[in-house]
Image (cartoon, rainbow, N blue to C red; front, top):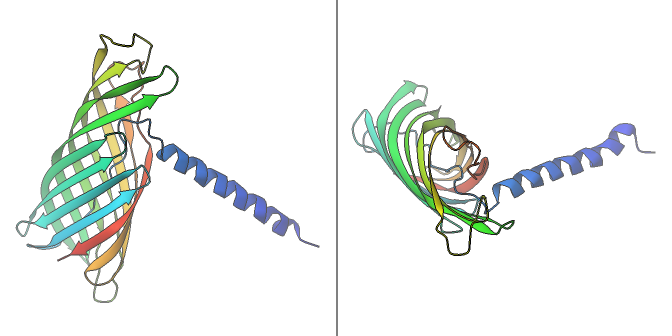
Amino acid sequence: MPTIKQRRRPANMKSRILTFGLLISLTMSSCIVYHPMTTDIPLISEKNDLRVDAGISIVPSANATISYGLTHKIAIQGFGSVGADDRYYVQAATGLYKNKGNNRILELYSGFGYGYGNAYKDANPGNLLGDYQLYFGQANFGKIASSNSNFETGFGLKAGYLHSNLTDKNYYDWISESGPFKTYHDESILFEPVGFIRFGGDKLRINIKLGGTLIYKFTNTDRDLPYSYLNLGIGLNYRL
């Protein structure tokens, strides 16, 4: 006869599967303007260190990052993402990096991002669409590969000021079929943590990233900004 612990195991497994499925369904929603960006955390360690990263994410999008050690202290980075419902986002950043010893790297970046989003709601039906600008700072910390291991891991935290210009085409309220429609100019603060693991060969590695986003609006607080809280990305990372 199965023990109580054995009988509980299938139930616990089903609960975990349902929870994971719920998280996935939340992140895969196309009714969003913004989602966590799976930007690479390069952990540049020296001058001429080049990282090229490309992949896809659960929130439907394809993305690529190029990071480069310009000098012994300064690094530059470019990132782009293209997603479903005409969503896109590009950013550029420059920063400082330092090897803290034992292959541990600290990076501090500042940059600017620009994007476009289009959220759809069945209820009215209607769209909320437009562009946004992000001014941000980001801190990264992690450990790069060594002569004994090709495994890399780390995390980063991006924080910044988000300005959005979104036109309400019957998304919040039904207005009319032809307009005129109202545009909301909103000011918000954004927090975006991300963690990653990389594993594989000396130069080419699989890169798995899990990121989240929290956005706090200062204006039009009665109108929620539709965005995804979580995003999971997978891709390939090449170090030259």
